[in-house]
Image 1 (cartoon, helix red, strand yellow):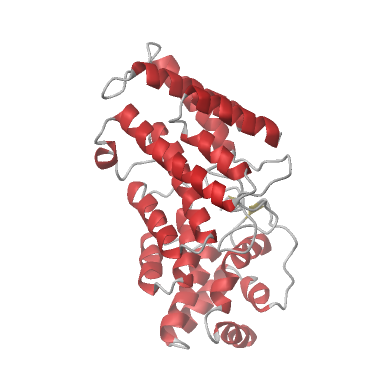
Image 2: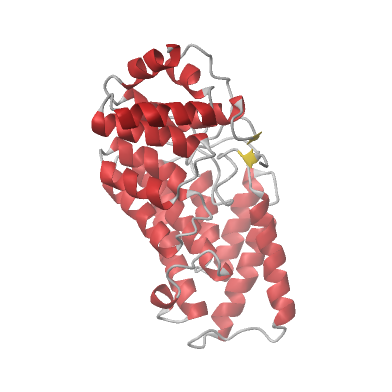
Length: 322
């Protein structure tokens, strides 16, 4: 089975990575809204969007007027988005901010420009405001480009439509920001909405949602995700299934059976969870199923869920020795 990209780069290029201190963020990454630094960790998928946009322009050289007109606004938005495609490629934080402001001067509907400003600010309150503006801009842009009924007509296949992606990135950033600010229910609600709009989950929302559902005690929600997105060959799914069963039923036959299956999937996880094997200082860039690297990624995102489950780590340690 092919290697998988570490989640710090598997989110569809939706935002810069965050630090620890909340569920599902790489230890080596920069926190949301943190100032400083000149590097940005971007998925190649972002760059692919500029190629897709170019192909669309070649296919429709006359441009599009949108479902309800607004050709001038669409033209300005298109030029603004092209600036953002370039901004994603630059390594200077100062230049990214300047380019985002340049894009917004062309069109306030450029949600990705607001997202860049949110990523680069050092103030979480300001970041929250930028993300909210991004969501509003993304909503208006989707309706301008795809029609006033776009959120009804295209629900279930968002992200597959290029024009919806800035809105989806804005939602993801706002969800993370709200989680950091303690608005956990609202954060979870946004992620659920993202999965409703895009059940294919190209952004990997489910990987971040499960630890948050554990954190708020929503076992029914956890079970729903585990059933809908079953991936038994990966530690993420198999070990969270173990945790779900143990939290629900304790040391049950089902939990023991799931443990044995998860151990076959990735035997490195128990040592990292219990601390008998030391975690590295940074996350790997890639991992393969069953590898130590995969276990490191899983443990980083999910250990807090295990720690908050009474008796879980002691049970893992006991089962590991049998």
